[in-house]
Length: 214
Image (cartoon, rainbow, N blue to C red; front, side, top):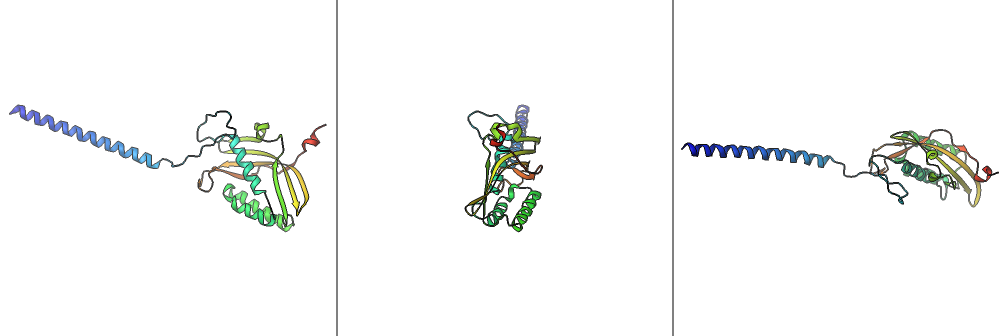
């Protein structure tokens, strides 16, 4: 009788151990499920534009070349007036509003009003493009200055051409020092996670490559 009693006690202890193990596994499964559910569904990874060579980076870091490419693309688009600056400039500011800080957006809107009142937009066609030999690849340390892990100053050397109807009325060689910040607010509207905070200083006229040559 004692033998059967010991066997029953042993089985009960074994069943208790199995129940504890099942409970522990269930708890672990709940923790893993919560971690999987709370993990981000999308990750933004900044890949260098030049893919001829490999690159090893932490996925959350933004390389300087990506900051430069973002800045030049957005700034070129907002300054592009294909038919009529009075309509195009306002439309560009609105369409690209998610890529500017609120302060910079207000500055651009004031700039639009000033130019419109001064008659600098009506029937104007405008575009900017890099000056050859002054892109990111020619001098990376000059083009992007890292202020912090989330702030940069990008220097753009561009040619700005303006036309009134079919007649060219302006060609300027300009250096834009532009502040850029990392703000991961809304990936659906701004997948880059970067915003332009307008100027780090006043834009400057610069010498053309022909003027620099002896």
